[in-house]
Length: 377
Image 1 (cartoon, rainbow, N blue to C red):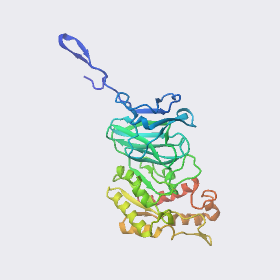
Image 2: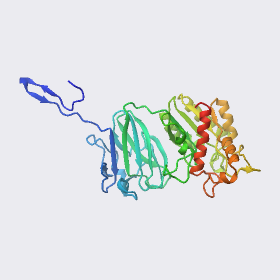
Image 3: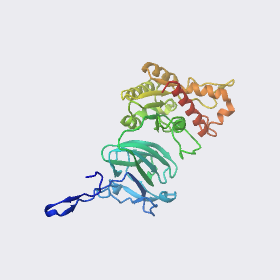
Image 4: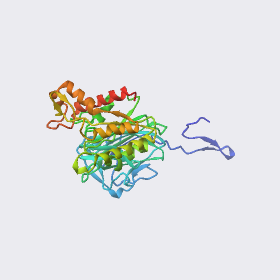
């Protein structure tokens, strides 16, 4: 009998034809519109009280901890649900039954100032900002269900979800080769991703990387320090998925040197060493990256900031551990010297000599990508 038939005619006793029940054809894609407003065409509406059931194969695990809210977007973005309980380990998730495989997940938030996306108990996308912020990521599903929620990005703000799209990429739950990025506000992503005014070089890196060779997952966040990246969930997420063909770019030091973070240079170096070793143990390739200097670090027309932000310890650590180094501090200074003080200042946010704008982040990403290529990475 040909495989794939929805029903099969079977010959029973006395020659009676018996029809087997149709097999359930599990969808390979979903479109969910959250909230209690009108449902966008082509989407399935889901309200805060819709509990998961095996019959629908989707719903909230604990709907008593959800609420319907309005949102300022259009279409599916005109309303949302709010997570009243949250945290990467929270059971207050939206669940979707999925066959084993690799899926692309696209999340659009409601009115949220800053929030992160978690799934399968770890962070997936960090610190989405602005109402209606959208991000996509690929995730392997091996246990038959996606468990997703919106969680901490900024304490005290609401964490909302307007829409969710889930598309099957492959039957095999294996992520493509990936460049994982860790860092601070000079590396982080800013929203909307396509036309933000501010930028981080991790956000702009995909334009310099062949998408057929690597995906990019930027886990950098503003204000981050090495201890926080290691202990507060970002490294945990990377270690859950990273594999031998992947790269891990780690830039830290700017905030570690701030007195309020109470991290000595010796402590910083050992925390960075621990992360490098944990990633190397997976078979992936760790790459240390030094932070660029300030726009105003010019003396007699030459830009230099080699003694800033624990750079010397990062350089020494790369040599001690035998790992690759992208010395963006020196590379950026050479570029800034070449273009001059005025052109350099134009690459940073207005009135801000530390944080690059979109154009500046793009140039920093180019320098990182060129040096990775130079090192055959």
